[in-house]
Every structure is written in C-alpha cells, then in structure tokens.
Image (cartoon, rainbow, N blue to C red):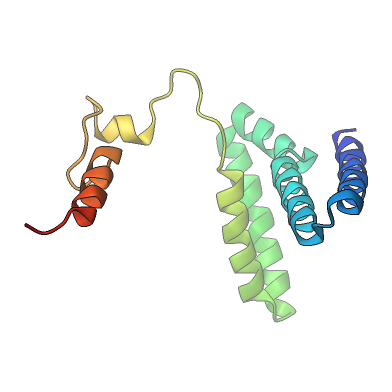
Length: 145
C-alpha cells in the first residue's frame, strides 16, 4: 500500500513540475527537484520492505538461530554464484546487504557509540566546532597588522 502511495506521489510531483515549468520555464530546476524527491522516497522505503522487516523480526526473536540460518543460506548462495563465476560480485553485494541490514534505530535507553567511549559527553581533542570554524574564518579575513 505504501508503494502505491509513493507512485501516486511521484505522479503528483510530475504534474506539479509540468505545470510550474509551463509557467516559469525553469525546466532543469524542476527536473532536479523531481529526481531528488524520487531518490529520497526510494531510499526511505528501501529499508522498510517486507523481507528486511521479516528478517529483523526473526533476528529479534531468536538471534542465534537467525544467524545460523542466514549463514547457511549465504554459504549456499556464495557457492552457487562462485560456480557461475559471479562469486566476487555476490560477496560485495552481500557486504552491502550486511551494512543495510544492520542499520536501524537505537532503542530508547540504549547508549550511543559516542556516549560509550565518552561518558561525560565532553568535546574530544581535534573536534571541529562552530566556534573554531568561525574563529578561523574571521581570522583569515582580518587585515595583517
């Protein structure tokens, strides 16, 4: 259902772009806006497709079993793709999938990686802050005395 809503949204944006280009004549700007909105909608829904949701649910219920099943399926597919001489392509694709599958939302009381290594949330040495950036930028514009 969400997929069909996105398609309807894309058609709406196309109509909006067509009507505004007829008025303004700025075709390139409207096309880039349309392309960016499509890319964002596709990426937004990419992580919410049913197979990835089902895998995450299965991983939450029984992580050890899910990892064993996933590893077995991956090994079988890796051998099959290696036999078809696409083993390296499958390996790289599976690395991307591993990254995508491990993207997720932090649970409400779960500590972030930053707070684990920096318990008091102090500024780390070498961190560029807005104050440092403004100071360096303004110093460059001052005349040398």
